[in-house]
View 1 (spheres, rainbow, N blue to C red):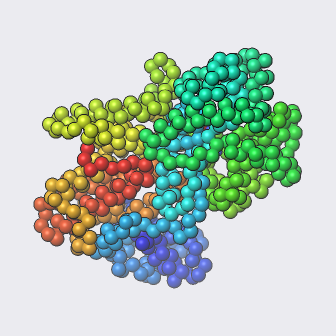
View 2: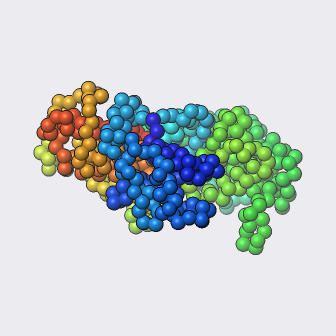
View 3: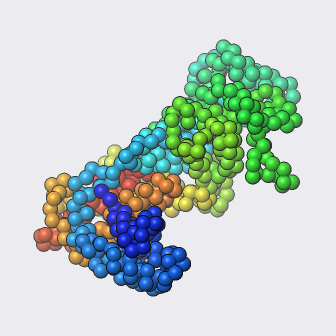
Length: 584
Ligand code: ARG
């Protein structure tokens, strides 16, 4: 079903053609929802933008548009405001009819796209033998939500975990383990990741200060890359170890990912370099093979290079990304490739995309998009660390959120004098704690730096997960109290009279537009904002209108509104990776 926005865009578009001719068929009618009821529910601003071209006053243009506009079924007579805005106030019967339509739909009236194009979302992507850090947590949460929205929209989404499982770190680690912990290279589970990470750090120190060690490490990488059996075996054990640890986090967060790490592209790297050579893009610089970028210069004004092969013959992070683009385009047939990493990698991706385009690996028909996000800091604006000054472990950070959520619930139950089972409390704490972490991340404009605060994210009021979950619980509370089965209400008459009913309804009917926006801009915070406002509008309606105590037909009509609010919250939250609770 079409959204109100789309219906009005079409109507104004038709009027533009009727008023000014075919050449206006593609003019954007500039319709949007108003945020001030004084200006009606929707507004079209196109008259102002056409003034110059038509050499007429905007108000006169607006009058002509209105004269040719066919919206009598859905809106009151459109009004001209200010310099030439056209304001629409929708008819309650129209809104009620639309609610009836979404009520009977599993997808709340939102149609999937006609063409299920393939979209690759490259997210999470931690590095083997290193701890997954808060940056990876952000990538995981944001990437998962973007993937969920695209999947709901009907796309064929390939969720790829581009783990760092190749390269110099293994040479270092293998060399070090050979002397310090040889059984780790031959026996599964000889280490846990904590050991692995600390051994990695020690190996790095040796690598940086000991030239012989460095040389041996380099040779071990080459042996690994050439397929030497012992190094392959050791490498596989180390990867398995890390993988199991990552999976613990993915299970807690309910994340689905297909692992296709850097090593996967190893066989294709040489060809990428050849391809660049054939296209005449390759240049030698101090023995390294690189492509000089157009439009990116250093502070002396010289073009910046993307190095694809080092002087020792080794390949780079960028080379792997070029091979990955090639694979995703030619084998996966992706029409969009989305990368979710911190903003610090913006230049890397801009460079890689440019080289891929110039080399013909990335045709114009395929979009490559870097989705950057800001760094995570603590409440004081510092890097997140433990009290001992060590970087905080992701698992500890998540567990702490659950512990705090449990404290909050326990306190609340005491105040409300409620008894609940330990099992109930643990389940609520788990869902509230993890949802709070996810929601806090998703509700921000992702590019801004993110200040991590347990207190803020667990707040029952405000733009938080608990507030949203609580609105859902309220609706379920109504049905428990009134012994209502919401599914039996379908088809009943909907009557919209009170302002708070109308306001809630109009908001409910905007989900399609919001999801279209999230898809276009890849900004899940828009969906959060929408759900936050929905909860607020529902709470106003709940405060001002009797529901169970109302007389028929209002009672049923209001129950339908409550149910649609809950279903919209449930769907919206699910697209953020957040499950709902019936009680909390
Ligand atoms: N492993 C990288 C890191 O931890 C992120 C990889 C992102 N994806 C990609 N295709 N480069 O920074």
